[in-house]
Amino acid sequence: MSQQAGGDRGLFSGHFGFVIAAAASAVGLGNIWRFPYLTAKYGGGIFLLVYLILMLTFGYALIVAETSLGRSTRLSPVGAYRAYAGSKHSPFLSFGGWLNAIVPMLIFPYYCLIGGWIIKYLVEFSMGKVGILAGDGYFGGFISDTWEPVLWHLAFLGCTLAVILKGVEKGVEKASRVMMPLLLLLAAVVAVYSMTRPGAGAGIYYYLVPDFSKLSIMTVVVACGQLFFSLSIGMGILITYGSYMKKDVDVEKATNRIQIMDTLVALLAGLMIIPAVFAFSGGEAEALNAGPALMFVTIPKVFNSMGFGGAIGTMFFLMVFFAALTSNISIMEACVSTLSDELHWSRRTSALFMTFEAIALGVPCSLGFGPWSFISVAGMSILDMMDFTAATVLCPFAALLTCLLIGRLVGIDKLALDIKASSAFRREKIFRVCIAWLAPVILLIVLVSSVAAALGWIKM
Ligand code: PHE
Image (cartoon, rainbow, N blue to C red):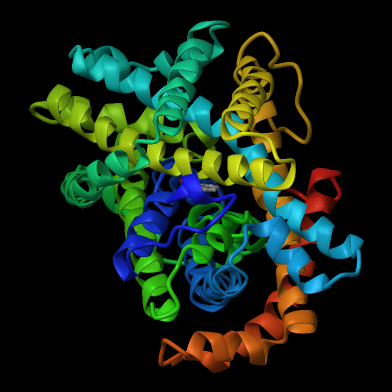
């Protein structure tokens, strides 16, 4: 469907076309890699609770809003924003549209890097090196190397580019239709295994029981960023996908499915990893604060202690690879369609531009763990900084503008009417309150706090 992005819009075949494409975009490294390490770092159960509350309120409101905004304008974000300016030139609207479009451009380079780490682990597991991967310090040694991680980064970027240029996204989506349920199943098995290890009980407690003394403004700020990252909201992706959606598809039901799937994978990833941190790494502050390394350090230890660890590890990383690839394709698609819609570049030129961008920004992220590790702001590595800027600062900003666009310009009534045309819209009240009041207020607080945290005024 993406080939028609610039001109006549292709449409998804119906409910499932949209759900599968949007779920393929949503379920990815955000659920399996990002969610567990943030939960571990920001207080376990309390982070989970805040995340779930945000998911049910404005996560829900925004996913519905963005999808129906796209559906009613039939345009990708920059155009969708501008559509409401009529013939006037509106800098506010252009800015809002571009902000939505720029976030995926920032995420893309480091998403490719983490995708590269996944391929590396996939290859090593398939060669049976389970014991070596589980060794202390192995991962640290790998990412601090100057060139090796960069080569894997290029490999993942190459896979994405190949799929996009060959126009075989459909085939990959079909494969992920099988891979996604398998991933869920395997994650459930591994989670049960992790939870039954000696010492894991403390981890289950830490993950599931909220400790209110650990609640801080940063819990909310980071949970909010995670919500955007994981559901692919605030980055124009759902606006674009909504624009391919037929008028008779039930928006509320379709977006609900995506939320459930996305949350389920994240919950399972947490259950796989956090109890294992306690069982295998002692659960001390240092282990819980491992950041982006957490999954890569913990999961091999789990597989190493299992029978058939090599085979299970290979299967697991293969499925994670697919989940990451389909998400990365959606990120690249969003960028390519903005560039070709707005700057009138061909798809090939836009894809080439994104490739260079991914190298220019992705390589420094990788070097930030090795030769450039002296560069750090507020304790963040280069990758952390880019991730923080994109997901925690710019996404809420973009979402805030979307709320204002809908609340003040489009009119919630108009959008609600459009949603009701095909759906019972049972949670209309929550939707209205969130878009008009709750989300703008919370997003503003989040935005101010995230900037204050980046400047070192409040503790990360
Ligand atoms: N939501 C995806 C994930 O959880 C990542 C993503 C981010 C996809 C931004 C599209 C846009 O991995």
